[in-house]
Structure formats: structure tokens, C-alpha cells
Image 1 (spheres, rainbow, N blue to C red):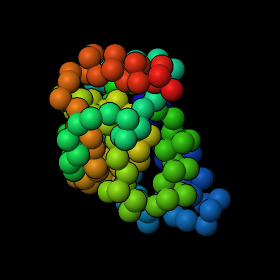
Image 2: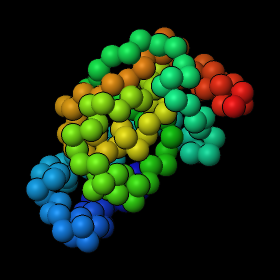
Image 3: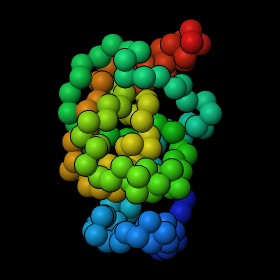
Image 4: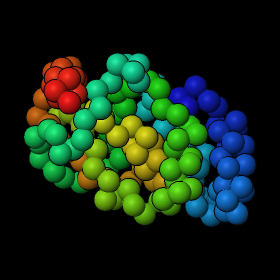
Length: 152
């Protein structure tokens, strides 16, 4: 997704929305602008491979639960799949993002929930999402996340 230019992403999204009888611009009126911002955020990621990222639940880790504006967060992984993001929006719409919980570091890097993060960015960067904010820098949080994942 981060390497896909806006024109190509728009064409893909329009086609997927049309398959479901929906109009991209009705659901995501600022798609182009928000997609460009998401690509910029991706360029600031730590570019960690998706398979090297720990998979943890917000219930698995301690931190402060709060609402954070999506635009204040940064992705950790460099790979976010456009297909998964668009299909998630088509299936769930844009309203549920305020109830999804993601896990973030003290600097605002996303540990878990990258596709929800991307869905919310496309819906609107001023949107707030529930996040478990862990008072650790991302490098330490990655280690903790891997330790939690290894237990399971």
C-alpha cells in the first residue's frame, strides 16, 4: 500500500466498492487527500517486515487506555495491504473505528492494529481511535510484544 500511488489505489478502491454497490466518494469523500497523508506516514515508518511484527491483543499488554487522533500515530511496519484496508472499510464502514483498540508506544508508533490504523486514516485523520498506550519506546515494546507472542 505504501508504494502504491494514489491513482492506482483509487482505481482499485473504486472497483471494490462498485462490486458491493457502493460509491467510494460517498464513503470516503477525501480518499485522495487522506491516502496521500497515509503514504507520507508510511514513509516515516520503521519499515519492519510484517512477519517480524508481534501479534498481540490490547488485552495482553498493560498501558493506559485513551483516545488518540489517528494523525498523531505512525506505523511501525512498512507493509500495509491495500486490499485488506479497503475490504475492511467495505465490510465494516467507517463508524466502528472509534471502538477498535490498537496498541501504541509512548512515541505513538503502532505495535498492533496497522490495518485498522490505515482504515481510520482513510476515513479521516482527525478521527479518534481507542489505543492502549504503553509507556515504553517502540524498540522495547517490540521486545515485550515478541515475549507475549512467544508465550501463546
